Image 1 (cartoon, rainbow, N blue to C red):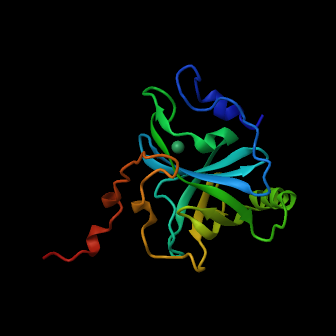
Image 2: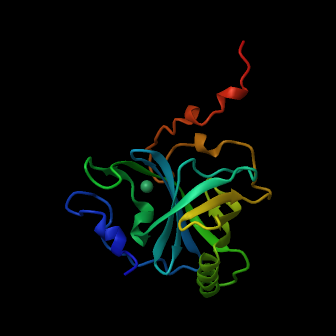
Length: 201
Ligand code: MN
């Protein structure tokens, strides 16, 4: 049932995206993935495995390693577990048409969890509460992050890096290659630069 909305939005005769739920991992650690998606608006899709599906947020500006950055993360429909390795092009005319790469992936654990069972229980509680604290073990994203639901909103959360040894002012979005293949997507970072602070020559 969790994938009803996902399936309703897509025609699997047209799109190469996974149509089935997938088995879910049976490892101790839960999986996470961040996909860079060059759709009508370029965004990053942040996904956390819970109950065999991927809880998903669209992050327009992408993740940051700087604890001062609060990145808007809009909760979207659950995605199948198999989506975590999906890369390719969603054809024109389909939902989310455009290129997708696996920008980062790895495992994650909720803060304080000592087993897979505890991890899933904690994730249920934190999703309900609207305050998720996790440790990411990715290629690009490492250490503690939080996802905090904004008051009086239905789907708007903020993705924030916690200040730990992995915090940095480096713009991690400049690393724009897939961690699974040789694919890459230009993230057009010049759009995000605040030109007003630049002095004229
Ligand atoms: Mn997307």
